[in-house]
Image 1 (cartoon, one colour):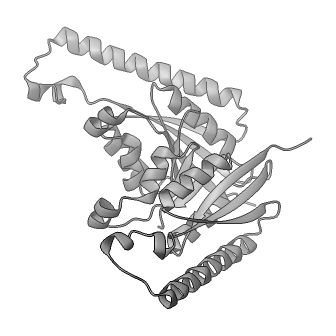
Image 2 (cartoon, rainbow over the protein chains, first blue to last red):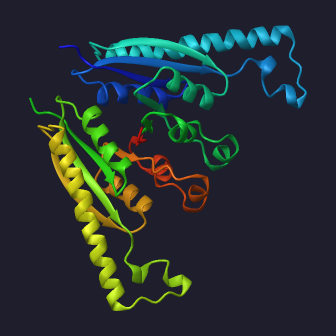
Image 3 (spheres, one colour):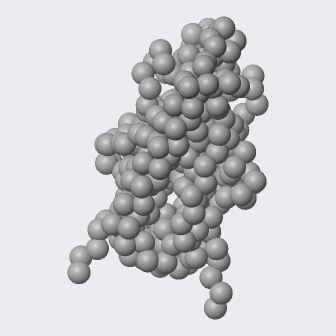
Length: 158
Length: 158
């Protein structure tokens, strides 16, 4: 019998919470009776030359841009490595895992990726900023819970 | 081997979306390897004598209050029946299902119940009101995604 494939996007970032969301997903959403495809999505901030820094009149020298790009790439690597350690430890057996790196405003990139990939479920940390930070930045998880076209799981670190 | 018990609260109401959330939950969250306890939570609006209608100066006669109470109770019955039809159809096998009826402001009652019941997961529809209704009423799912003390799954009707 061919088993139904289920595509689960897990948004990962530097936070402990997103790593916890990944473990939660593997322990709670991944069942043996379905063919699970786990897509780890990391969103890099937009490259500094196109970022909102420009509007504020900042000018970055090439060296600074190169350093920032290098730093971001190292960050991607380290986040993906931590994610890998988690799903290896949790004996995922039958899951296929893919890594996707996007770039831009996290909330838009995540919603857009979920739509394009026709994901069955999106799992993410809640990014529990405090009141002021949330009021200014908005919350990525709030936005995705409202706008992503599939069920969204918001996981808080206990 | 004793299997871990997992308590999943599903907030149900009159909406198609909450019934879809229940099916989603059974198909995606309930796995054979855990001992699942499904708690269906329905929240009745606060009784009219204590409701915000009072503030606006409305006075309800006893007959009207009795009629509203009867209507609400019938609604609870009909929602729970629809929920039952869903989990019977989906061959839930090993799930124990309990029905809980709360009363008050849905968002507070749901968060409070999740906390008291020490739920592992809360599943609910997104109640996708339009912009204005959301702005005025606030969204129950928004509130719960932020304040419930466990992972929250927001399910949209496709």
